Image 1 (cartoon, rainbow, N blue to C red):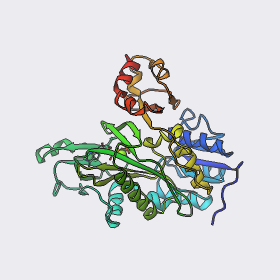
Image 2 (tube, rainbow, N blue to C red; image 1 turned 90 degrees about the vertical axis):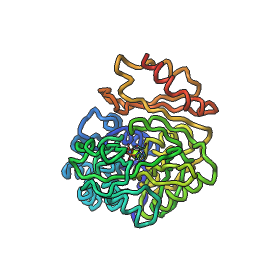
Image 3 (cartoon, helix red, strand yellow; image 1 turned 45 degrees about the vertical axis):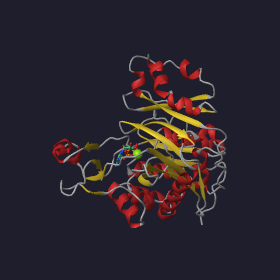
Image 4 (cartoon, helix red, strand yellow; image 1 turned 135 degrees about the horizontal axis):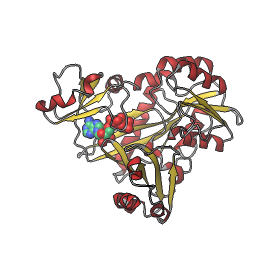
Length: 370
Ligand code: ATP
Ligand code: MG
């Protein structure tokens, strides 16, 4: 059994995005040194770690450089080629283990994994021919999709030509789900299999991108308990170590379907930083480093609103709008260029006004960019 990572040692992070940045800041808070690998010194995580390592995240030599600079390795991006992660894991303790990514990276393999274990999900299939699609469907690339990219919605068979571009790479088809709400369970699984789950989050997506999260979700207690139980079983079946998220659809009859699994800290768990005793980022560091998991207790209702690059279209957003909201905290990721659809930052409001802020999010965003 790998020993817990002692304070003063170096935690290496594969990936340099905002998730890596927030993990690194939490790791520093626990007394660790930090390293991260990314292609640019201007990436969010490389701006804050002790040892920035510049190189492609999906490159074997660069990943090995990170491993050599670290005492233990984790990741913030689930598409690191499994072969590369296996080499890293031979050199340094690595969590989550490469086998977890092997079950998740490819949507078809992920769906087959869920099916093998009997976890509830929408009807799906390999989209190599247009046969057997159960319309309305969403065609999704099997790999390298995020924030709704590499997807195409088809209402009926005659729409099929619209999917030509997406279908240039291997895809799955998924039956479109008529859901009442989208929710996510963020939980941590420790090295010994112990679980710590956060209150279930309620999510709104726009154009396939997470727009906002309210926690706790406005759902009955038993539904929340079912969601946590389902995510817990998935974490055990994967043998995951670290924080992970399970995105789910809540149907009109209150049953749940798994949308997808993210074997890492997750955008819909950003509210935990500020609203919970232990943030998802600290919890992830605790889990992978072999420390006892922290309390997931939520102190007050919380809302998280994403800030996309579109807000910068005319000029810098009017930050005074966020500053004037009681209990609001702004997080900017330090990305140098604001492109439409790019996640530039978020703000979290913790307190009794959270649910009202969830409803008011669009008005706030409009005021920021007016
Ligand atoms: P990310 O990894 O950023 O969460 P992604 O690109 O992997 O996103 P999905 O989570 O598969 O994409 O889909 C994005 C959103 O599209 C979902 O949150 C949901 O709103 C909608 N969506 C996806 N699949 C379905 C489906 N089968 N039925 C209805 N809506 C869906
Ligand atoms: Mg998703």
